Each structure stands twice: as structure tokens, then as C-alpha cells.
Image 1 (cartoon, helix red, strand yellow):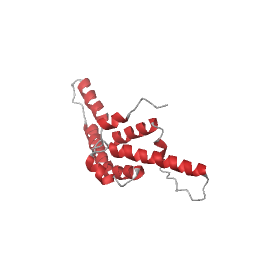
Image 2: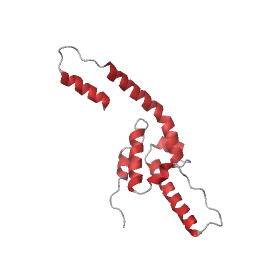
Image 3: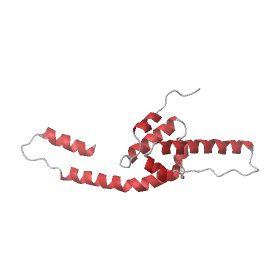
Image 4: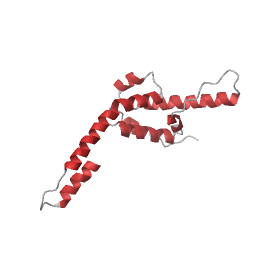
Length: 141
């Protein structure tokens, strides 16, 4: 039975451009989970079967590699074209590692700056509490 619900349109609408790496990665995991292929992101890569392997092992390896290739294609299709060119020769695990390395520093700096503003946020005496709380809530969000 073919699943009529496809979440891949989420990735088309929100391609990876850099600052949205965390959201992009979570969306990819959701789509791969829905398609029953998220297990390939666990970091375990099956070794190619030997010539004397039984047919069940060969079939399992071929099934795994098909899912792994599909996960790679989903990721490549959902990133900006300049990033596609950089990652077209990589598999899904290497793509994630490389993108995480590229964009985690930027996200860390952004989180630090927001935290700094949050901790510096002080309410002036005799001012209403609502605007102050909304400002703090915005920083936390």
C-alpha cells in the first residue's frame, strides 16, 4: 500500500540555507522517520557482503543501501544549490557531519548573543511588567 501522506513538501518549502540548520535537520529526521528510513542516520554503516554470503544477507545489504541512498537524495534535494554542489559526492552521514561542522559555530554564537541579552535584560522601576515579560519570552523562544 502506498502512503498518500508525503511530508517532503516541508523540505521544499524550507531548504537549508545555513542559519536554519537545526530546523532543517529535524525536518529531515521527521521525513525519514515517516518513510521508515531514519535508521540509516544512526551511524552504523553496513559492510558490503562477501561473495559467499547467503542470499538473505545480500538482500538485507541491498535494502539498507537503497534506504541509505534515498536518505542521501532527500538531504541533497532539500539544501540550497551551492551546498548541493559541495556535498554531491558525500553520503547522508558525511553530509550531516559536514553541515553540522559548518553551521554549529554560527548557531552557538547566535545562542550566546541571545543569552547575553536575556541576562542583561532588566526591568526599570515602576514600569509595566507585561512588556518586560514579552521581551524576555522572545529571547527565550
